[in-house]
Length: 439
Image (cartoon, rainbow, N blue to C red; front, side, top):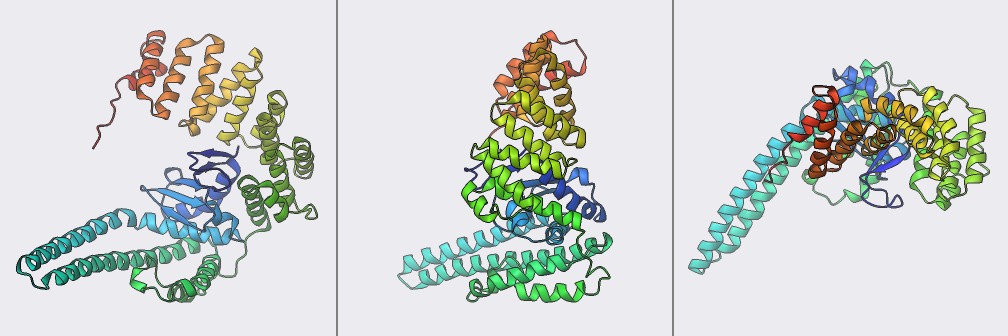
């Protein structure tokens, strides 16, 4: 299920976090071998997708990797994306984020000292009527410039370290560093004019040409340098590109990018998505059914059919394709959540237990989903299990940040649940929570 989470703008301007089973699965396929090669537990590393067209990825908040959609849509091969993910993994294992915080503190301290010294000089100049004031301003600017140069120089060293770590991880996983090299060459060509008059000390990365030269010497020594992506992996990459274009671009743009004359599976995928998004369900179903006929074991084509039908108000018709998608990809929790929603939306009492079962299984991976807990609350209420319904409502409120409502619901749930049971303990845990103090 393709969905915007914390969307900061409309899809046309593409900003915010995105959830999608297919793209998340593909990124995991790219990243997990690299994480393991780096000595990391893949389950402990979050991989988040940001709806932004720029070619970018970064690490934040410890073991959390953020990937811009542009990294997938603009890079031609999986190997290029894998190279970037290997580089970001180098930042994680190098502890660069925590080290950078220390450098920021040092740079901030140096900047503050320069401001204090400069201010003193300015005040002295004003008192004596001399031109010491202008010298004081120079102290301020000079001190701040020194702090900035020191910090950015440190960042360049971190980038070089992450590059070398990436090379090591790619070798360990028997993958080529050529994709990473090709990307840096591309970025170097793009930056020729923009960086022509820029002080290299004010760039947070090493000069692009120097970076490529250092990497190329190391990369060409690898026995895997000329290894290509498998056709199957490249095909999945093209499907992910098509999906992102289909969901994030205007339908007219999608049809120009993938005209009807283009009969490839990725092109048909993009057109199917664009058709359903512009409410042309008949065209969307023809395209999706054609995709399913060509690849009946692709869970994401079945998922798309179910999502298109469900969001078009056809919940009963959405159930069968979503069941098929879950059967083909039983570990895809997001698809289970969508199936649970569709089952609940049929208003068929016979399907409530099935819906709860799928939602409950999905909760092991998607326990922070507000929608999941809201649907569970509805389901338990329909079964007459008011204690669990109140608990699910409390958990949904807590995830929305409404602690007051969460406590109200938890109190009701606790009074109806068996004392000491896991649900009772969860309700009690909500009741003892305290709102964080404002700093």
